[in-house]
Amino acid sequence: MGLLTNHRILITGVLTDDSLAFGIAKRALEEGATIALSGAGRGTSITRRTARKLGDVGEIIELDVTDPAQIAEAAIELDRRFGRLDGLVHAIGYAPQTCLGSGMFVAPFEDVAIAMQISTYSLAALVGAFRPLLQKSEASGGASVVSLDFDGSRAYPKYDWMGVMKAGLESLGRYLAREVGPDKIRVNMLAAGPIRTVAAKSIPGFALFEDTWAERAPLGWDVYDSSAVADTAIALLSPLFRGTTASVIHVDGGAHAMG
Image 1 (cartoon, rainbow, N blue to C red):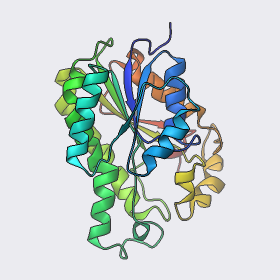
Image 2: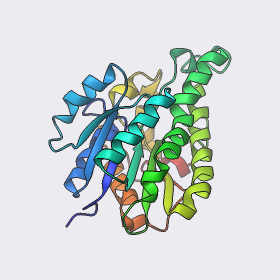
Image 3: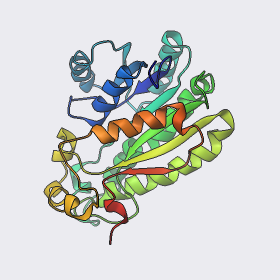
């Protein structure tokens, strides 16, 4: 029996098979979970194609986190299909190009607001909408929400406004954990080191992370291997971490703690 046997989990952010969310979905299936994936807009068809590589995926749901009506409809659909949620993986992030690589004085507020809504506020939007389903979790220790993060405790070159969004995400996670903890719902951030994905390639200066991370990390770091990230997500989704919430779990070879 796997760690996630009988767990029903929604995983967002599966676009390509090199994404962190894809790795988590693959491991969740291996550990016995029933999963649903979500896609947004034109990306939903890409999610459907990528899902074929996973095999037994229960549902593909269209879910644009900027559309409250669509979020509400997704909650209704999941209730109809699953009846409950034992886990939610938030792997959603986006910032207009002005927000990355040009410093902090170029992006207009309208672009910053887009980055905030999609990359940070969306976590609250999803937890709020799916809270009734998460409350019904039958998992030992209750439901688990895992949000993919990138160390928000310091400023990184070229990361600019997205770094601000990640810092906000970490703070939001703590506040959500406080609010939904009495419902036996735990909320944790998984701060991964840099992994070479399609999304990462769109970040200006990503090579700076690649070139230096392994040198700083006491355990070393391979930007082509996301397996440790996926394994940690599975542990967080499982009852093994039933006493942990409001935490940032770093999976980065230890680089975040080095001077």
